Length: 96
Image (cartoon, rainbow, N blue to C red):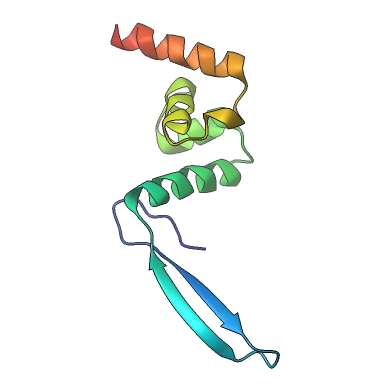
């Protein structure tokens, strides 16, 4: 797995080995910035045992900002709908 370092080049490798463990195919893929951002969010969540408040603090965000960032990254479905509704309301209140 790559380190998912934002604003840097990140790669992921694919290797196929034969029955003796010798590499028969190797390819490296460059991850897009979007893939890196998504991977970074998931890795930070995993590092914080999926605790949203701890992950938000780790990223320098509040919990609502993290929820909205997860939604914009396509992971909003991982959170409860009532929580997402509250995060959206907080976001509108701060920008409105």
